[in-house]
Image (cartoon, rainbow, N blue to C red; front, side, top):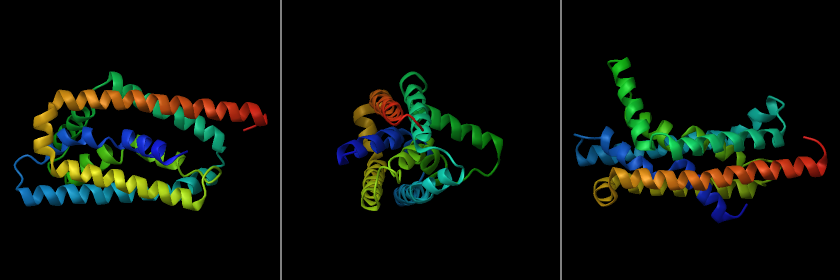
Length: 211
């Protein structure tokens, strides 16, 4: 997998643009300095979560005795379903805002918005966790490739942090509707990547005759 394909895959599942309306909604009323701290904390936490899956995801798979090709097929299907929710379901801003509203209703003391919903599940989404494991498969990628994936992931997160800090002018330009459109286009790209992942696994299964 080349560098550009890794970047596109991580960009789609992390979705920095789709996080902008969520950031604006959960930081409304905060001072500028507090909003910057929230953006930085959300970025650091989400990087930490994805690094955990980068380093230990493969170990967990091996411990469970799961075939790598089976995981690739399952991962591709999950990513495809995730892409369908981006295309046909609520846009990411709408779904994440609804999640935080439900959480606030369920308990009096809501968690820091930097942790929920910004870090998880907006930036370090289930799709991002799964994608980072697939992009660091020990059977396909060496340590240097995995390190490059980590750098690309950190780069996408840095862009997401920058977008959050520039949230107000960006959302004034594209609006919530624009963010929803971008999210759906990214969903189409992710669906294509997921389909390619599943087809590649099936081709390898047919070629080798085993999982």
